[in-house]
Length: 520
Image (cartoon, rainbow, N blue to C red):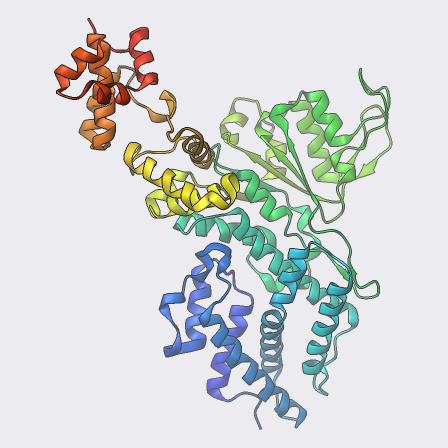
């Protein structure tokens, strides 16, 4: 009796590949389609781009049902001493991994939501997980894994759920650039080969520094948090607890906001009297960071050359000393750095050390601009606005989001390039919430300095709504005439209408001489 029939083997092979797939790459869809054949529902193919990753995934649910039945059948055959090659036993194990993960997924999610790495909840979850695993592994042909091996598998699944949730929490959007960014973050956490990661690399990822690059305002720190808060944390089956608190292991330092001395103090710590104001001993982030924690260095391109040398030593030897002492201490965590600068250009100018760069670049993630994302998927604007409104306005978010989208559509239009990226969009949401309008700076809007030329340019580009056209033109006519009555006669409008349409900011620009020859 064979372990798998031909059709079962095809399903097992597809599920085996799916169990180790990057959920944000097209391969995941291809493997789901291979597992389900004609029953694959194309409408739900892209569940991974929906907010939160979609709580219910019909295709995945169907695959789970099929896989559970096949796993039970294969277990029965193994108990009856069916012949099984090493390759078939490996497929059996992969089926088990897939089923275990999905059976206990909600339990992991509840633990993550509760923020508790230990306690009764995690103990009960681990016991149920271990009992489920042992039922399928207590077979003569298979070697029952040691308790530590099951604990490692439990920790891997816990990491998978945290990573999936963190990526969706910190990276919003359904555009191709947003999905590629999620896939890149997943690889940064698990590498491209999750089998190898599970075997050995899970304990070595701190050796690889992650460098996040991209324009200002594109969410580099959010990417860093997604990576840093998703690291592997061992589970101790004897203590029935995870080794560290997964929620408090990320330490961020903005290097551009501090002087070199303060940067050194915050990173390396200092001894009392090491510099003026050092009134006591201080432990820096490199010392405080736990083994599974992360230190995030934002604006790494601003770093003083002398500190670059010290960090180079940390990345090479893991050793550092507090300011004012010689005792060597050990950094055990992971470093993530970020910059919006072109480090290649900085190296050519001699402002960034090449040897330090080549310690940073083992893993690079590039964040896309908002313009790239909206060019790929214009509907992503609404998704981002609603997400930002939720953070800014709470329960008022849906109404605020509608106001903001309407204002953007009427006054900025689909061609606006958002030079400040998501950070600018967030300020737009705040401005519209408070003042019911958002006026980009001249640098951001790239309008001509002359308001008349700006109006002409906007008309040629077809960027103005009727309301915006009237507002600008009424302001220009009023600035020329200096009288609401005369402006109303020229425009053939009611005086009160003219008064209500005059834009005070534009009027001030005109009075400061920004109107070219209009009011001469």
